[in-house]
Image (cartoon, rainbow, N blue to C red; front, side, top):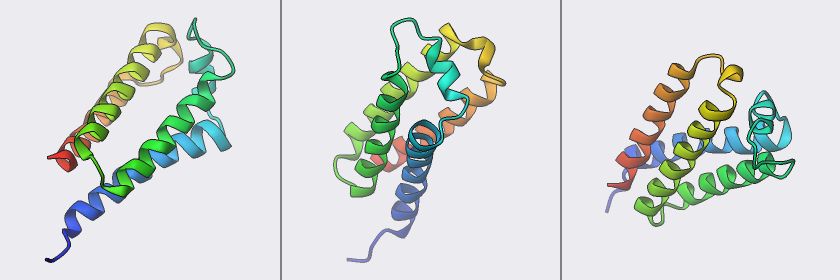
Length: 116
């Protein structure tokens, strides 16, 4: 059976986004995300690294290709929680909320396309 290169490329692209967002922007070189997360009332210094680890773990999960539907549910839940938290508690720190929501909608469209 011939490998599905479109699926492979899609998984690589999606995993790259999660790895960049998690490993780089939240763990290795925290950017403006630190300020946004600091505004969450129930958060603390543990929250940004926890999100970074979760996003990096999602990247690894996506790369395995195992259980793509539960992975899509996990991505959906994480993005909904992060977007809601950001908009509720740190809206003033998000430069362009419409762009953020649009980009995340595209990310989820790809996640669910992979999951089918």
